[in-house]
Length: 433
Image 1 (cartoon, rainbow, N blue to C red):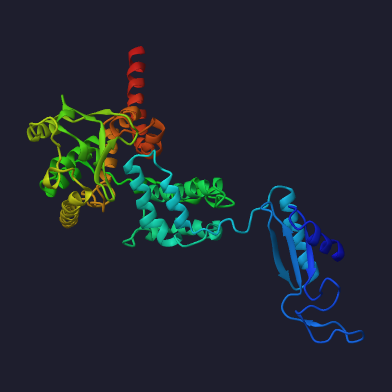
Image 2 (image 1 turned 180 degrees about the vertical axis):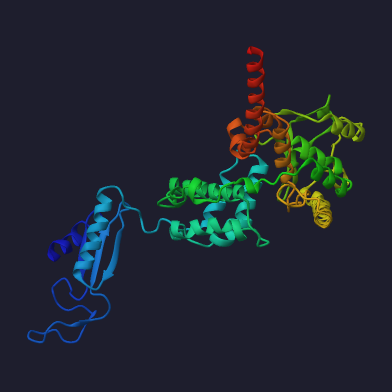
């Protein structure tokens, strides 16, 4: 066996699939090599070698010879035969594949995204910079395993943000999808042997967007928050009652507001190096959004006169940024939390409790501006709006997307629907009798 393998090493060294083992203690003529220590003469036994004696070798599809040293001939031969089998069955992957760092591959992948919107590209960059690259930027692709990346993704719900707080399930899903896209591209480019993200079942392995994450406000809470926010009070009500995205509100102009409706055509997004960039909506379609009459009266009284003027301008008349809105929003949230706590303490003191012996005023939740979009969906559903109306108002791509996000809010309506159905049934029964 050894002689055959050695012959292949000499004659067919560049033929893919060939391979074998070599005794590093022997020269081709059978004499001891420089790796063999001591005298090797007849009657004096075999020499003591330095390091592993046997070297397995094979030729890959790249036409290069690949080697590895072992202590025994059996180990070397088993390894060489295994790798040769992979070459013959087209399952072999070059050892050099996957040695690029994830960060460098992700940057090359980003450069291919010339056909996406600037705000989409900015979103990719944000996820990479703030979530992915701090952990995996310097890690070789082949070193990122299912056993490491899955617990990391799950842990983002606890401490995934730069501030050490947890990320929402939707943000974790976006992170998973982005890493999967980078790996998929890397496989196509021959930079990775497999897409390790494809081994993750997002529905079962990742945190789900549960009802607890959707924290809508009541009418009283929303109106109270708007009152305490100050100059952005009307904007807060529009976000909370109309359900438009913050970027859509930032890009809204006077000419798109008429007859009690908002015509949503564009969205403004911060892009690194470019400032606020206005592009089409998230779905690429424009939509009409109805404004409740009391809010419309308020909004109409505050509209600018120029048709091209921004309805909710930021500093210097430019597009309003989330960074400008967030401080007064957070102050308003804290003020409402203090108000709710005071109300609850008073109700406990005087015994003004509900059927569960709890204060009637609910705790004001710790929320971000995105909760106003959830609020709009919740208030629409509680008013009796069907799923297609909610989809239209929020600008979801499909009704199934709306159901996935807010379907649980219809459960209570089922009870009310059954009650009304029962009343109709009794009326019909009485008319027969």
